[in-house]
Length: 153
Image (cartoon, rainbow, N blue to C red; front, side, top):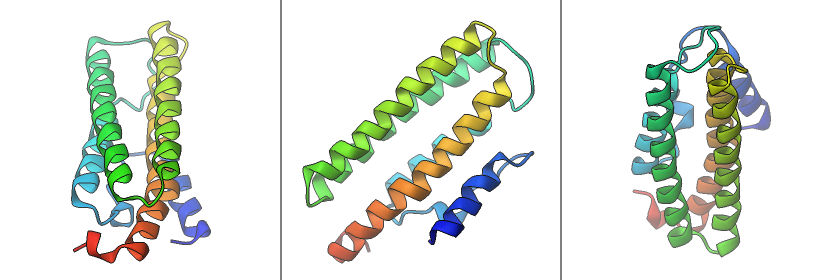
């Protein structure tokens, strides 16, 4: 995927309405692709309206999303450690995941305090997930595929 295609895909994420999963987000690693789709579906359940504050349903969705993101991040980082040629690749990815968790902490606190609309949280999550897959996961896994084609059936 070219940088222009990546930008168009990421920029299209902010468009109104429900975003459908796009095959261009598939990495070719079945477990990682399944986990990305589950994260995508969890994120899609967050209201995209302008309500402020944290409803009980939204609180539960955020807990589910955080829990599953933590699980996915551990799986993906372990997969990278096993399959990458350098530890640096896994460490870099781990740093990106940690930065996401920190940002999610800030957004959750703002939402609980009534300082953030659920639409802003929804948009952040949509944009971050697509951007991370397109600009981090796909290039990294593509490079691993070129170096070790036997990893990919």
